[in-house]
Image (cartoon, rainbow, N blue to C red; front, side, top):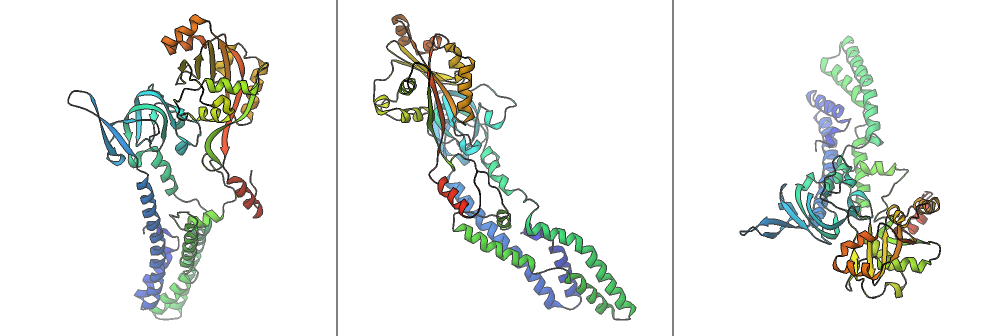
Length: 459
């Protein structure tokens, strides 16, 4: 209610109502007071109703949490609690496909990758690590887990650092509660009040003084001055504006939009440019292979075959990583089918920008172009230009390579798959590149046609 009474016309109307009551015009005072009260009640009711619905929606999204405590024998014991019961300093564990219940500092992790698109808009999963990242931006804090994000792979143990309204997710959501910009009717009324108030007061004082000079009664002279002062104020404007905003808010509710502050509807009507976070709106938050660039001597199918072979075995289940899902989906069925799993696999992890697999004596590698090209000895201007061309198209570039091992080398990796890394630093042959992009959502073309039909442009 206090926020709604901050209307720039409120002080002038309140002063006029008070003076009218003192000077014996209670009807005028009641009418002006009713306008002030009705306007504030309507706006406050809309805000309370919207916040109540928003709180119910947020309550449905509260994830469960797995709290780690020490048992009687010192072993770890897990307790399932709701996220609201967590406190800073608690130790939690999150596993694959679980939602992180609170902001937390990673203290243990095993091949953890997190989907942070809900917070940062980045569609690619982010690897996590135990080592600290001081001074890093939010999206680069690899040692932190954030509430509302989803673990797509691995298991992590972390210490809770923030819960509830102190989490980065809630702080981002509360940005919409900040002060509205200086646009629209409220701002114009404020400017009008600031300019008209001195003139109105001066006019009222002159009328009162002239009445006294003409030997009118004090009450009549003051009443005439107040009438002139208040006459410059459009006392019905706030109520009319609030009613119009309320009607617009109700219509927007029918389209699934929740309006917390009625005056924001007018600001929405003044928008001439809209910038979308493409993840989950213009795109499906799902990667796809957009381009395949084979190296000389190889075909596109060979690039996909080696890339699929370098992905981890799934034992009949789906791939976990978004990149591997996209590669398997792009490969022909005979390449992505239920073939024999690799004899040994080296997964991608923080500090190792590639993954590799060995079957028989064939080693296949996929990873960051700068790493793979260096191991191939092919980091020349032609290859750099090809990578730059794919990146310029907005694609995430993955390099694919292979190597033929001798029997002794092939046997050594069976005993310790980590030994695969020793054979990935040199001696590789470049097979080609993959360009991955977000999958466009099915709705944007319809949205574009709708915008075009109304005279708007989409870029």
